[in-house]
Image 1 (tube, one colour):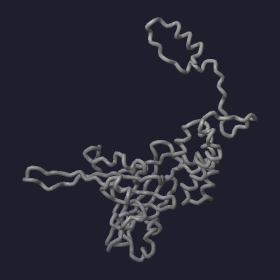
Image 2 (tube, rainbow, N blue to C red):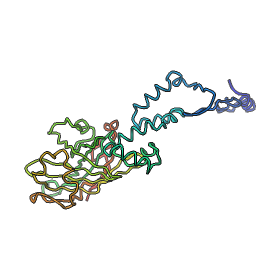
Image 3 (cartoon, rainbow, N blue to C red):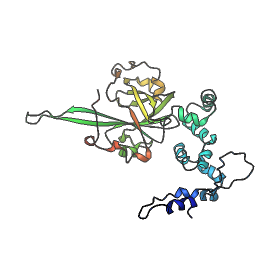
Image 4 (cartoon, rainbow, N blue to C red):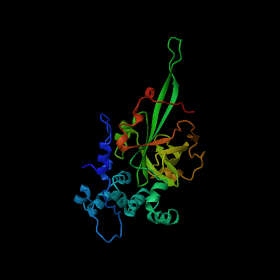
Length: 320
């Protein structure tokens, strides 16, 4: 039913004039009950007219939110004001924070919670650097390789593209793979059950503020350790979707140092200097190529990311 205000406007327009509908004028003079947010101390009970709120009790809604990931909670907070105020409950963000930084320990997390972030778990989640575990960090690198001359008239070159893949876990472990395969193909083998033919190496990582350090051991007749130091950052607050490569070092290690420490090789080399090696046959080398930053690709985007495109369809640059 149109309001009197809307009707009077339509009656004054000349014949043949096209009137633009203004449905918001139907609310003119209508009293709208204000919304009572979560945790209000109002004395009168408030009944939300929305169908989903009538059919879904607050207790069940709380159970649904408790099983959602923090990123899904952020999307759900945009649905309506009731969901927004409900999702601001610190219970959801406390469990997410303790899980994200479980390698540091609950006692240290509570100390930082009180001293640095004024007792706000949601603020910790947004402002404190953290490693994401809901996808892969991918570093795309290219270089030029000389080809075989044909008929002595040209010197062809090839643009070679390869990727570094890292998948982190909350428990302090990670998986690493260096391959020319695309993201959608590598995702299938980035797990601890992958066969040796897939060349997926595992280990442990450390996180100190925004600095991440990992180490991988390549087995063989001359074992070689790859040490990587990175710095977390993000394109917006709280996303932590990029990592800069600070150093990439390969060095040798003695056989007696590897006895039972293959899974935690980082504990063996964590205190080493940049140019330190324990095997004279494998000197320490600090690499300056292949240092493209890591970008984060969530699991739901591995099939559609632009990193799956071939070299000729993407902008590229030659490192070094």
